Image 1 (cartoon, rainbow, N blue to C red):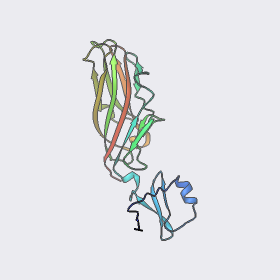
Image 2: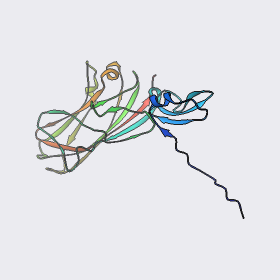
Image 3: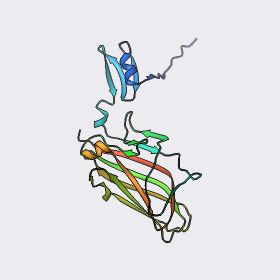
Image 4: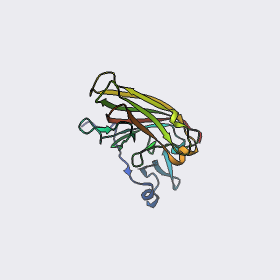
Length: 211
């Protein structure tokens, strides 16, 4: 009878929090995945094998998809009223474990370190009841005088009344102390008439770290 050998196999390690990992009995060769990375026990102590440097120094990306405002439940915008663009982060995709550049609870865009640089893609669908006189003004806001309000966008409804438009635009920015401490956020204002937005996506990539 011929011997049959396995040429590959799959091993799935435990997924726990860092607090639980630190309570484990130290056993050489153990593996575990937590919110901050992948760890193994080597030489009698936990060693992170991925990522091999602090998350705050890592380059990466994260995508946040909202599922609250959809084609069946559009966010209504009143004429002249500014609204923080919501995104409940129902679906999140990350390049690395622990990468996070947005807080869906506070609706704040986040940054890791002063002087880090980022690229953010803002995506949504929108429509206006009176396309001829309505537009959307978009503004990146920050607290304590941070000049991010010069990062702006605009939507003109060229297709006609109540017709769907796709908005997709890429913005670049850096992080200062106010950004680190308070975060920033996107505001949208309908001007000249009412409008609606839905299917909101934030895609944020850190392109340079100064940590």
